[in-house]
Image (cartoon, rainbow, N blue to C red; front, side, top):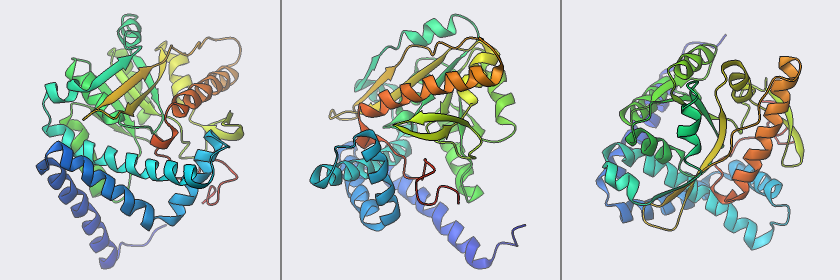
Length: 306
């Protein structure tokens, strides 16, 4: 059992929360082009100050493209940090942007699959990797009148998590913390024929399904396939990418996973999760430098079992 939080810990937590709040206020006060430049500078700072994360993203990028090395690898790593910083700066600014501003540089491929899935009446699950600007895509969907529930990891300190929940709620999202109660909340949202977003390229509690992912065995969350099989909700792999255009984003919605009951539930979930792994690979390969996965994700990664 953890001991009581020390005054130093509380001071550190307060500094972290206030830093995010100040960053958010600064991002909202900046003109768009200035915010973009700020994101690039933040990305450079992240890379120089996060050696372990730099090493980890190198490992992940080489899994996506084993031929990466030298200057090309360094450029891709910097791209990952730049993309991560841009994601945060954009997320901070999104609540203040107009519907027109959000839509202006937004393009889609396969969007018709979402209303077609919802027409079945069982809701729809968007299965996402940590890629590009997914918050922007969520805001765009809400602006079109879709109801959305998102399941997110509960981060520390709790005050920071609550602040992020409030940020997403201002965008119109219903936020569900990852945990024992998440499945029930998601099932209720699907019964209400909502869009449910699940980030699923990282198995946080290591209790997921074993799959081959970028040529190496690891686990991915069972949730998307399990929920799809249990509720009949189509599972659509999807990604949202930054483009070179000002406020530019391009979203891709893939065909629904071919989930069906063929045997025992465990075997069907395993089969569906492996199909999802292949789809995540495809989405990430479109822009691997926009993949924001800085944590160990395979058993061979240093720190995986910590």
